[in-house]
Length: 114
Image (tube, rainbow, N blue to C red):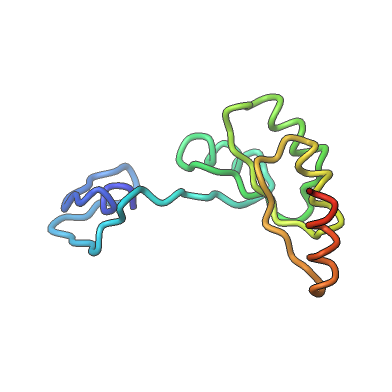
C-alpha cells in the first residue's frame, strides 16, 4: 500500500508483487497503517510494518503499559469504552477509539478530560 500511495507502479516483495499498477488519487500525505490484534505477533507487525498498534479486546491498560515501556516509540491507540479510556491514556496509550452508550456518556467523558 505504501508503494501505491507514493505513486509507484511496480513493487516486488517477499509475499506479493505488482506491476503496471495505478492508484489515484494519490493521498496528499501518507495514511497511517494501524495493525490490530492482541498477540506478541501483532505487536511485532505493528513495530515492523505499521504506524500504530490498535489492540484488540482483551488487552487492558496493564498490557498497554508493558508494551509502551518495552517499545516507547510505538504509538498505541486501543478501542475501549468511555469508562476505561482514562486508564488506557494513563497507561501510555497515545489516544483511544471510544465507544459510547449514549450522548450523556460522551458528555461525561468530555467533562472529565477537560
